[in-house]
Length: 91
Image (tube, rainbow, N blue to C red; front, top):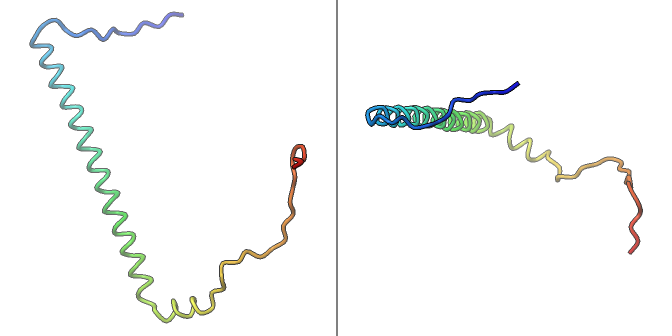
């Protein structure tokens, strides 16, 4: 089965060229504005989320100091087994 695609030839009429150029620029402008709106919403949402987190952590200083006093150094405890795969490497 053969698929036929419309060829992307430019129109010969100057008015049709101008209209297609204006239409293409309008589509690009709409996409640009949409992208900027989405980026702005994400930026404002991120700032609000960080502000709410800071506000929640800052409202309980006694709990934060108790958590810091009880906090142990970053040590991962457990039992580990080394699994060797493939041929052993001789040095």
